[in-house]
Length: 246
Ligand SMILES: C[S@@+](CC[C@H](N)C(=O)[O-])C[C@H]1O[C@@H](n2cnc3c(N)ncnc32)[C@H](O)[C@@H]1O
Image 1 (cartoon, rainbow, N blue to C red):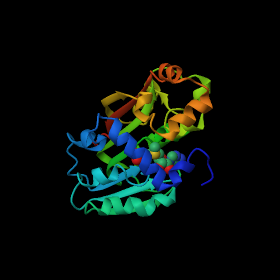
Image 2: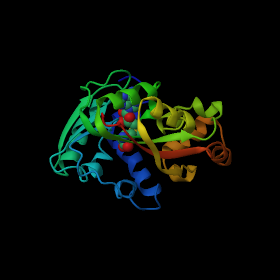
Image 3: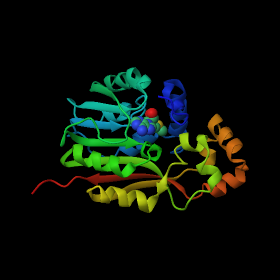
Image 4: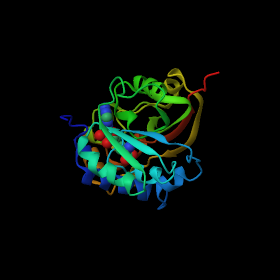
């Protein structure tokens, strides 16, 4: 697809390696997917949209929790993810559909199509997340739910980080301020916008990965300097509802 920023996601193996790191480090050795989805009742969701689905890291867990007749529709710019995505969903006995598309303007779905739209660590890669939030609102059925998990900032990042390709791929350089991010979700028309969880993203969490090495090289920061600059970086999980029609 030609973007240096997204090329790591074209290799499902490399992507899986990064995801395994996230799984191990984010919740002190508990699987982050199990932890985050545990308390949610998703059994009535039959039509599920997984935006920026990658190779199916989340879909594997999500698919086991939605309705038994559910179909998961994964959308991603990297079509090399298609086979792995379908395999992850089908391994949990659910139907899968993979739609290769760039999340830039209109989503290729009818109005009111989905019960649940899920997206993890994707919107910080987009130039115009507000348009995508509006599109998510359009394709959700009235009463449907959006669950998004993204990196947000409590304060602006220094320029050496915003210019770093490794920081962009690592979901940091393109992140929005938390207040803007929540404002965009409300501005797209959602109700009951709720921060369901938030965690810090310490450099140690991914320092075993070559991406951290590339990040330090590109930014010229020391490990201490990077830790200080990244102190306002959070991973936030937000739930929101599309209001039912009266
Ligand atoms: C950090 S990965 C997250 C993947 C998956 N949601 C997960 O949590 O494992 C970001 C994903 O977003 C996709 N992506 C980034 N920008 C995109 C765009 N403009 N349109 C469609 N997909 C995009 C990438 O290809 C990649 O699979």
